[in-house]
Amino acid sequence: LCAVILSSNATLLETPTAWQSMRLPFQGVKLYHGDSTLLARLLMALTGMLSLGGLYYGLIPRLKSAISEEALAGALSRGLSIALPAAVVYGCANLLFLFSLPEVIKKTLLAGSGEALLFYVTAIILIGAIVALFVAFKGGKSSIAIGGLVLFFLHLFSLAAVRDYIRRLKIDEFFQVAKVPVNPQWDSFILWALVFVAGLAVVAYMVKLTMKESN
Image 1 (cartoon, rainbow, N blue to C red):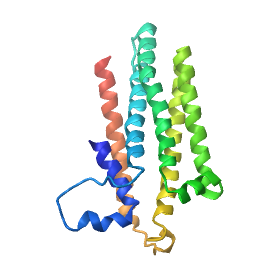
Image 2 (cartoon, rainbow, N blue to C red; image 1 turned 180 degrees about the horizontal axis):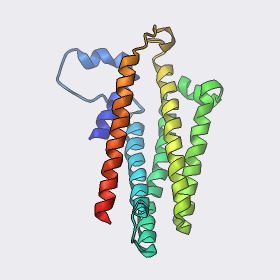
Image 3 (cartoon, rainbow, N blue to C red; image 1 turned 135 degrees about the vertical axis):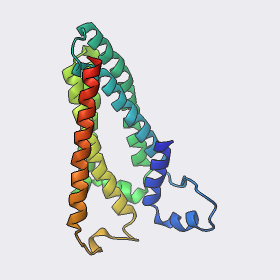
């Protein structure tokens, strides 16, 4: 449900032409489903989370002590049996997303000039991650699976930049970020940074307590 809501909101963010119809006449809270990329976005969110969850299941036992190699190998095999198919479907969802974009934006991405070059970088990293997961699944190598996990995270960061580029292309005729006046609010940023660091410290402490109890 969360994936559906987030995908719907993210899609609506890039579709200013639909805002008026979503607001008037007011008919209560409803999800936006009038964009051709929505299904692809939803599939990407679901399969991406499933793939990362499988990797978490397969690799997290290695952070614990007093676990046999047989148990570690079994966890890795089961985790990769989930992560690898999910990653393949995720890759197909990325292709579906590309071909569901408006023709002008799709041609801009495939041209690979300027910021659009990042699209090819993102695709290559994802292919590398899937290959790494396949090799790890066949060979039972946790180090290769960790490499695949790192590549997957790099892909997600790169994909975020590509998605932002696509968003700017789609709303360019309505709104241009470069023309918005910038008024930095450093006090708010510093507060956010402090809360963020404190949150990471709390999460690290909770993980440490959990590992102690499980041992």
